Image (tube, rainbow, N blue to C red; front, side, top):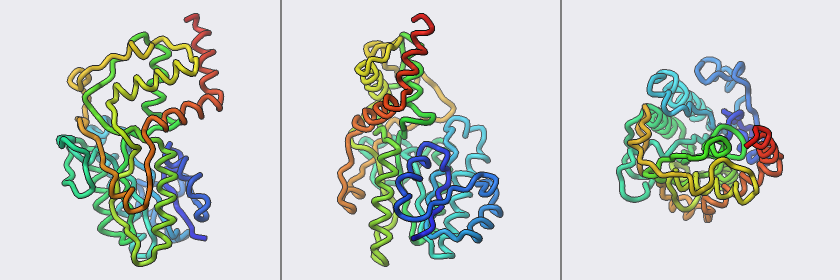
Length: 312
């Protein structure tokens, strides 16, 4: 059984990857004290000791706006750390998975982006992730780079949880309506990654490693995504301060942020679905599943009680 390193196991994607990759081999998720992504020496020492056959890098600096002022920190985690991992992997004939983002593109195209489109971005976060991609592809012959978009899950800090919290507290939500993409669950990304790795690792010298886009099917704006979440919550019976009809659309110009987000975050996944024979589900299915997970865990019942306890 191969030895697998998963970085960022404490994050929403890393958590799902630990589950999805467990059948493939022995999974290691070292703590920061053992494997500090900002310490190349400590990283290499751990790699030399454990000698993983597969490195799955789910760790990232994802504070998109804060990256504009914390450039060195973002670059160290998103660009330098992947380079260290990829160089070690290349030197030891290990395989590597690097997760990237729709934010490597500037969003000016009028169609979904394909893998061969020229990347270009106006933000530090996107530029650092693009540099990480390039380093991994340059240094590791058996590298899989997966560009994902608008990640969320039933647990962790993400847009779904933000909308749930705000809908409990505020009668009106104003959400950007001119940025379009595909909300993608971390469960879908993790399960698809495991499927791709089974195929690639068994294909030998003919394995189609490289860059692929991986998102759920369909497209929607942030406003449409938020409206859908609120409607689903209403259907489950959660008492909200805001109804779906009070989720109001606004342009990006009305919500300025330090980092300029792309208006078009759509990624074409035809290369991945064609190469690996997959059918990626519509983004709305993942939302329903995530909310069902929350309901089964008791989180929605707790939130319903907490909201009523405030006398609303």
